[in-house]
Amino acid sequence: MSEKQAEKRTEPYDAVDVIIAKRDGHALEDGQVDWVVDAYTRGVVADEQMSALAMAILLNGMTRDEISRWTAAMIASGERMDFSGLSRPTADKHSTGGVGDKITLPLAPLVAACGVAVPQLSGRGLGHTGGTLDKLESIPGWRASLTNDEIMAQLEEVGAVICAAGSGLAPADKKLYALRDVTGTVEAIPLIASSIMSKKIAEGTGSLVLDVKVGSGAFMKTRERAQDLAETMVALGTDAGVRTVALLTDMDTPLGLTAGNALEVRESVEVLAGGGPADVVELTLALAREMLAGAGRDDVDPADRLADGSAMDVWRRMVAAQNGDPDAELPTAKHTEVVTAPASGVLTRLDAMAVGVAAWRLGAGRAAQGEPVQAAAGVEMHAKPGDTVTEGQPLLTLHTDEPGRIERARAALEGGFDVGEGHEPAPLVLGRVG
Ligand code: URA
Image (cartoon, rainbow, N blue to C red; front, side):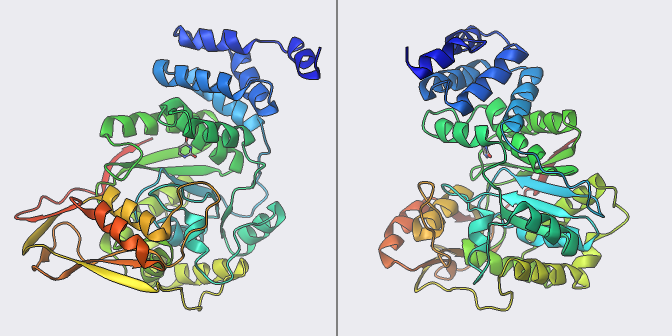
């Protein structure tokens, strides 16, 4: 008998029984959930077995108790951080990802400037949405990896940390997410909710605000699915003792006027300097107010901290604490090309997915984990829906270091915007859960 077979004989459950239970529409027992997550992390449950289970979960769903237990099992697969020793309360924000979503960059220093510490352990981008770490890495010298001691020290001294989530947090999720990616099971709401919340709960924040994006450029294309995901995640956070609320926000059109790493850093600094696009400012303030309320500091108005420059001070200290130079020139692309308005009228639509895919193809994003990204690549927008444009005026500027990428980026933008008459402005914040 091989060592693996001998190990299997001592296991309390059999993976096939767990798969069959879920395939036949039953709720899994607590013990089955604990075991299957742990055994998969240990390599005792094979990838093909976990694939089958993930598909059964996608098709048959999970009860609230099952999702809660699954999340707890993923948290238990790794370490859990503890910020209770800090001198101020903690709050974090998680966005389900969108095009031009640079909100974390101005938000973390803003909330810190209001007296609440922000431990923001982030990831890198994959596909058409950018990753916060990729954006910050366009700042010369900036370092994403910190030790737990460095995170604690920076939270105490500066008040905000945006850094890479270490491999110690919810390792079960890392393995399962990679498997879901190649088995058509990413979209299962119980698996998305437990994946996001296991990392956020393990991160140790006291309160959490979720920005659940809805629309063409978002993971959740419909309001119903976004609402379902938001309610599931808020329930998970609440069950785990983390004060959690969610905002549902529009992602049919990109946020702000830039999509791309250095381009988005530049726009975030504009917001911190008291300017920047109105939608970025509006969402930054809306999320800051929720974070402050969750941390018991709703007596502070974040708009004052943007206006008086204290959020900018924290940004500069936060960047410098991670070896970045806040005064350094950001990289600029070797090539730019302009897309012009095809007619005069009102820009009635600018599709987030089209802009996101164009930025990705220009080199701002990666197709597979581990690929490098271009710091300066991306799309700059000169108009947003509702703006009047004149035929031939610049609508978008494409930025890239490799001109060979321009043609495919242009192809992504075909059919991605309309110029016509009249425009009904859509609200940015569509709903709230919690
Ligand atoms: N982001 C995550 O961290 N997990 C998911 O499953 C989906 C998005």
